[in-house]
Amino acid sequence: MNNKQKKEKKKMGLTTKIFFGLIAGAIFGLVLNYIIPAGVIRDSFLINGVLYVVGQGFIRLMQMLVVPLVFCSLVCGSMSVGDTKKLGTVGVRTVLFYLATTAFAITVALVMGNLIRPGIGLDMSAIKAASDSVATMEKTSIADTILNIIPTNIFEGLASGTMLQIIFFALMLGVVLTKLGDRVETVANIFSQCNDIMMEMTMIVMKVAPIGVFALISKTFAGIGFDAFFPILKYMVTVFLALGIQCFIVYLGLLKIFTGLSPVIFIKNFFPVMAFAFSTATSNATIPMSIDTLAVKLGVSKKISSFTVPLGATINMDGTAIMQGVVVCFVAQAFGIHLSMTDYLTVIGTATLASIGTAGIPSVGMITLTMVFNSIGLPVEGIALVMGIDRILDMTRTAVNITGDAVCTTIVASQNNAVDREIYNTSLVKD
Image 1 (cartoon, rainbow, N blue to C red):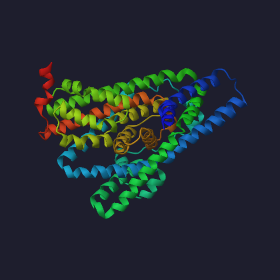
Image 2 (tube, rainbow, N blue to C red):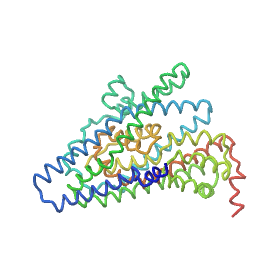
Image 3 (cartoon, rainbow, N blue to C red):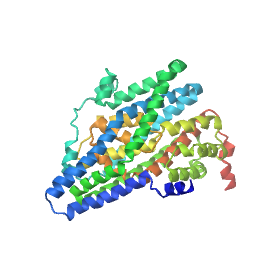
Image 4 (tube, rainbow, N blue to C red):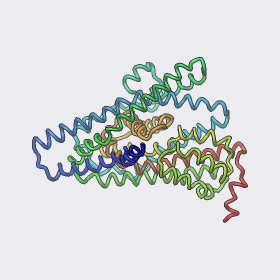
């Protein structure tokens, strides 16, 4: 047992392997671009042969998972949200707050993405396979886009991968299953088990992610050389800025507006939880620490936090929504694809609703990002550019996510007279 544990400790984590796959792929791609001369071996066999097949194979594996994974996870997610009826007003306010801040978060991301424009300077149109995969979409009006959310034939929607229709039906089905309760317990268990199956299948597919990323990045850098480095750095800066705005301006602003409590005291007392979330990159692991810190240092009733914090860990994915918004802008700019206002509204709606089903394992965020790309016709090859550096961003996203959970909890508790303001302001006396 001891030897086995030592071996497991020595093993690299998946994110580390993906990062190494990114670095190795970039180096190999640069070698192909600058050192190996053009010819049948480089162009036909390596770039458009081995690397193309392996990279596109990985993309297809991710696309294969999108519809069943999102459908099952959203049904299960909406079933858990249905339990909020037990807490009446508290549940409704909490869910509305989480959805509103998620929609605002992705809006911030899209604005920052269009201001900084991280994808400019990265000409991905030179990659033939990628440009060929860009779907040509018919532009529809906002009114038709809204109506198209409601499926006329859900099986047709599932078959074609029309994500907004799938999300709408999955949420509605989950709520109905919750309402019927014990009468449909078997059906509810089937969806829960299917969700577990899809999560496990996702983990299996993600095991080959380092190889897939290596192939995709190698092919990319073989075509564009060093031109990719600066745009990727701009992408990271854009994500960090958007996360900072969401955390320190939006969240703390809402806290001050709705409660009158000091944002400085909140950050001071809650910062250890944020640091723990950053180091673990796991929202679920911070749940006990968040509840305890809110109660002991901020005076928030555990009757409120024991519901709102776990729910937030499930459906409040503002950090992930920000990443998805910036990636949308980054890839669209890199491929020279113009996004209309309808496209942006589709991204906001899709990412907001999908946040209900993104909890569980880190890799699900990338799968739902594929879904967001599909909803507006962006080439999913662009995701490979950001997968290798996602670990650092994921740690920051998690810290932002749990901060949003805590702020929502404090606001809802304050509106229900469940915050001991004397405890909250104790740090002022200590200082």
